[in-house]
Length: 517
Image 1 (tube, rainbow, N blue to C red):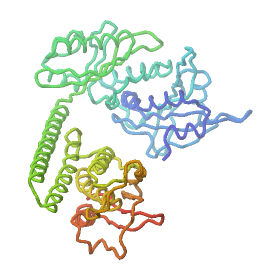
Image 2 (cartoon, rainbow, N blue to C red):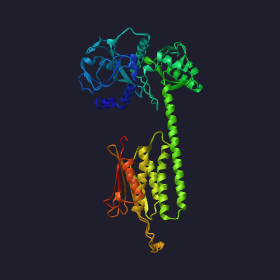
Image 3 (cartoon, one colour):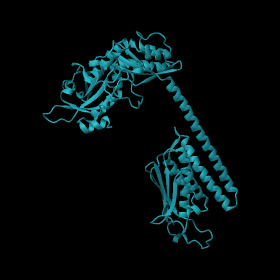
């Protein structure tokens, strides 16, 4: 299914600002649909041909949560023209809300048509109609309206006029990700002085949670909200936002806490035809949501603290092994302990990164770069070896990162030590005079990574001396290669292959599945 933006860009002459405005409208218009007890269809004019009647394309649709829909089928992508869209054409060309006409039938469903022009106020204050909202009400469920329904319909008409004026939806606030307002959250209507003229049952319940047991009608909501808030500064801020909406501006959402309850409030100005007549306040009880958020934050902090302590413990183990290696006289034992230090340190890197992350995943590129730098610093070779990374590993879950860093640590150490071996300790040939010493050769190890079809493909390649003739990884007695094979095929559930490069040197190719484990 194509999106609103896709349809508008492909079939209409609307520019980016027009499409952005329609996208914001579609993000907030569930409120208008619920208040109207009606389906809303967003119609945009198609690129026309001179002399032919105008046609419209439906680019978005929303059904009411407060009533039955007039359309059982999705209307998005439908193109209409001729007498069927006369009401849309009138609203578009004359720039006024169209409410005339007899009910129409969609199969067995009677419906009432209305058309609301959508205006956009440009940077030069020029206002033009860019689209039309079709407001279609299912009449089969019509009944005598209650006080709630009358207030909903009155507010819906005010918002419809603001859509026609180009003042609804209000500008978005940077960084605001809260979901679009919903009528079911609790609706409060204020007059121009800020007093409550109507409060829905859900709104009354939200304020009862904050500690106000009387009826809201007749109360000055800004003063009441300020008095109820547990934090005086928070209460003052909430009151100021309500007053701001009465002045015709749309402030950002605000949470008010009192008596252990939390209510999220959003204030919208009501100013049909540019005249401020009050405000609409939506109040949602989010007490349980915030309680779960705090529980999750506590859990995340605990997990990060655990990773921090594991990192510290691993670093302590590495320090003890390093101290032991200095006291061992046997060269082979000392080398084995030094290798263990590097392996423990590489795992500590993963836990250090996780201790600073908000979830059980790590940005692996930084870890690879640090492991590669460490591999060159401990290499016992006269050759200058440069490390380079191509591509990106991206974010990896902890269970993959811990095993993968050990595999890469071993492959990088092997590439440096065996691809570019140091001087032969049994060679008694005296070194040449400094003046005759040639410049040290340069080696390179490249770590490449890319993702393909839910797999991570990693290659560690060097331009060294290559593998010895008849080499077989599965028959090698080296502990490092045994660790690589065990982790690659076991913990990582992947595959590993070591081979000579065509241009000289060695490459290790690792494939790791990234699907559910």
